[in-house]
Image (cartoon, rainbow, N blue to C red):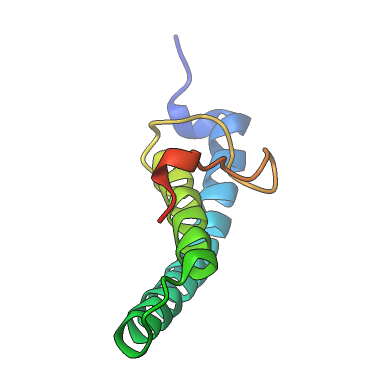
Length: 94
């Protein structure tokens, strides 16, 4: 007879990491929101493109995507800092 899923040690470790990444996700979404406002303000008040801010925004959105993939069981790999920061394609830059 097989044990239920909650009896496995891996389940509890994953649950602990999921709670941790839920808090990290909230922090990352806050940073993402701040960056969206900053990029919008710079574009509104300047003729120059905020390339660096847009690059940071792309990086944070890739990190948020990694967290969502982990929390939704779409990926078994833990996001940063347990694997490298998500790479951003140069084609995707602003």
